[in-house]
Amino acid sequence: MQKNALTTAAALALATFGASTAFAQSTLTLYGNLDVAVDNVRKGQGNVVSAPGNLFMNPAYAPSFVNKSNTTRVTSSVSSVNSLGVKGTEDLGGGYKGSFVLEGQMQLDTGAQSGQDGRMWGRQAYLGLTTPFGEVRLGRQYAPMFYSFASATVEALGGADIQGSGLIANNLQVRQDNQVSYWLKSGGLTASVSYSPQAGVDQKISSARASTGTYTPTSGQIVGGASAGTEATNAQGRGRTLGLFVNYLVMPELLVNGSYHHNKFGDAVLQTATGTPLFNLDKYSAYSLAAKYIVPGLGTQVSGIWHAGKFSMDDGSDVKLDTIALGVKHPIDNFSVGAQVSQSKFTNFTKGKDTAVMLTGDYIFSKRTTLYVRAGYVKDDRGDLAQTTAAGVPIVGGPLPLLTGLGSIETPFFSGGGANIDATTRVIAVGVRHHF
Image 1 (cartoon, helix red, strand yellow):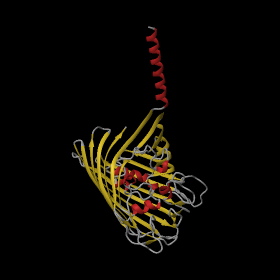
Image 2 (cartoon, one colour):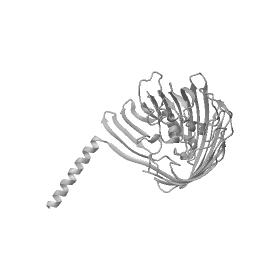
Image 3 (cartoon, rainbow, N blue to C red):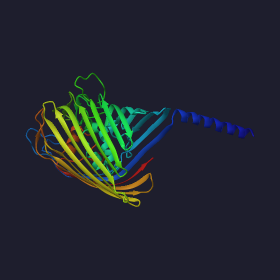
Image 4 (cartoon, rainbow, N blue to C red):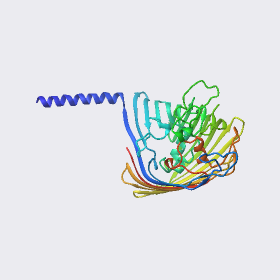
């Protein structure tokens, strides 16, 4: 009897504790996504007309070639990006809710942090307050333009998603430090507007951190680097960023959306990893339009995304790029097959372009676990010699390898496999993903 009484009392105490916890925190969720594969990346020999090991041409224009390579890897985030997060909401009553999200990214092949320049909670880290008039979020967040890509692609965003990753020309189109955003949801309409006083632009921008593993004030860092969003007195408005996203569900099978992104570079200088100045940047602006349709009765997804961006310099010149991406995905019982194509090009500057194709196949074991195959390639046409404005250094290449080499993009195609200028890069991967 005594034992039963103690057991009952303990159960009541635990139930009371659980009730008070539920009252204080309406929901608390641990979630994540795990994606790992064995892949093979083959890069053709590329001609960059440059000094050996340097992305940029030397004054003598001496021909130099980036060697071809054949690499087999165990790698992560091929069909979808790895993540581990915790989120919670608290019902405050009267239509008000408090919320938070902390989300990081890891490599399954090594266990190391991955992407977002090594941040622990680099994917998202914000607090939110939902009101009867919309939601306000403060902290590190996705850029509004990112949601245009993510909602319209037929794939889960990852290293093999041509529609998603192929549209990124500037890391601040993906995530931003110090962001304040407002979200409105009404019927089929979802809209957001954002502002950041310093989203992540260092005074010196280069790929030095990516190539050496270190950052110094002299070498510079990638756009969106770990310390690039530090707020300080800044008369030039460096890092100031605005964004807009509007998504409308026309019918259950059809969505359309559009987005806008703008950020100031202010007094930032784009330079090589060795410190040679290339451009005195001023600002970057971009637009996107997208649509996705699911065929009734078949479940076939068809989507298209268009994106245009422009880097403006302080001397009045600019670099313009244009991208279009198409995708289709069709379910067959537990299987699904799909294809994506994209072309991204500089409409001026080098006039280089990148054409990419990705074939996809999934076998769905359960609602959480999927076996997949990915096979694709990207072909870079290097275009013409173009002069940089700061030092007159001529360069070539399409947007994908060139912007990666300049530090505007952190992670290139194929989960870091990358692509050579003036060459074809091929990938084939077999992997498994699990989400919880």
